Image (cartoon, rainbow, N blue to C red):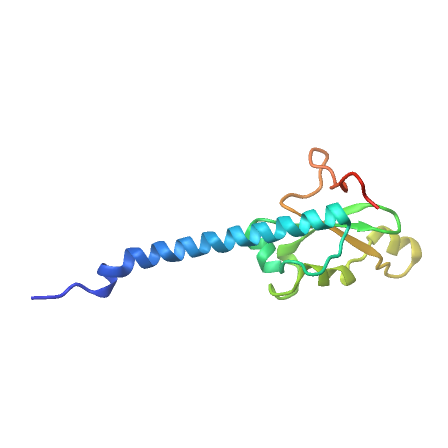
Length: 137
């Protein structure tokens, strides 16, 4: 005579609870990234507090849109190749961003950039750069 193992008794409910927790975490990360995007596009900042790199990637935001203050160009940076811990807040990346065109023109690293928003896709002709909402400063 054998008894049922705890895996057979509780296994399905434990796996279901873990799946629900994962989905809730993903939804919370998505909402945090959307709130940060709305704050950045609506008020143009402040960038702090911001979601972490891990939160943005978990929510499906794979790119960070950055605007150069020198030449006013918009570029996207892939968050999955950034060499920083996943617990790093997105706003801390601003000081490391450089415009390649302005740096080449000035002959030194040009580090004046502004974080615009988190994006799910790169900037293309069919998906242009983000614009601020009406009533911007």
